Image 1 (tube, rainbow over the protein chains, first blue to last red):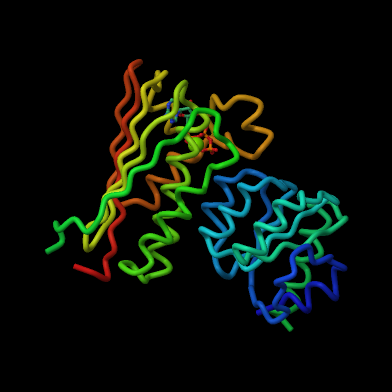
Image 2: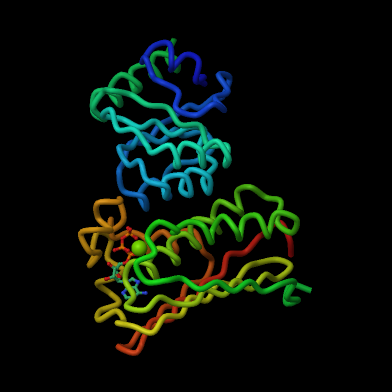
Length: 116
Length: 146
Ligand SMILES: Nc1ncnc2c1ncn2[C@@H]1O[C@H](COP(=O)(O)OP(=O)(O)OP(=O)(O)O)[C@@H](O)[C@H]1O
Ligand SMILES: [Mg+2]
């Protein structure tokens, strides 16, 4: 189990929404910019990493009760999307890192956490 | 007991209404909260409804109608549109096959796995199509309630 607090500390993520619960826990993550792939895989224990910033990502996150969505590659959603995320209680975080690097770092953190 | 209809919801989906894809799935989730408390069940149903509304928004010439029939133990979804139809259903069901327009691809639609997601998460799946339109019917059962 990893928490958003650990993640934000280690990966210098920027919270985009006001609703961030630092104790949110998860033990897996999934990176894809295809909505249907994300719909198939993410779940309440699996974070979603994507460069997509349009409103449909909120539907995907909400339907699968995704613990948080990390927007990679420095993409930033519009204020409208951020407001909607707050309303729907979806936690959005941003990273400047390319998806590949972010995923690599997060993978290493999760492995370390699992294997001690 | 299982065949008692609790409620029917009907939605219209406009052609090219990309920005509202997912909104019907969220509305269904809200409307069903009192009847189907299982979160796992709602996730399965939500994926299927999302994919059905996405296909009507992306692949139809004039949109379609989505009916959600809520029974005590399951939900039946009927998605009907008036064209252009699916030329080759086997191909459409092949993971990765897509005819999504560039605009949809940019938004992350068009992975070519939406119908497969419905097949995987639903309990019954029925798809028929001619040039006059497509009818997709599926049911998602809540096995906790019999
Ligand atoms: N209602 C429809 N009318 C016409 N064609 C359709 C309809 N639904 C699906 N199709 C066809 O079937 C193909 C496969 O659909 P599917 O939902 O599996 O993938 P997709 O919509 O292309 O991509 P994804 O769902 O992964 O975003 C579509 O690209 C399209 O050619
Ligand atoms: Mg689709």
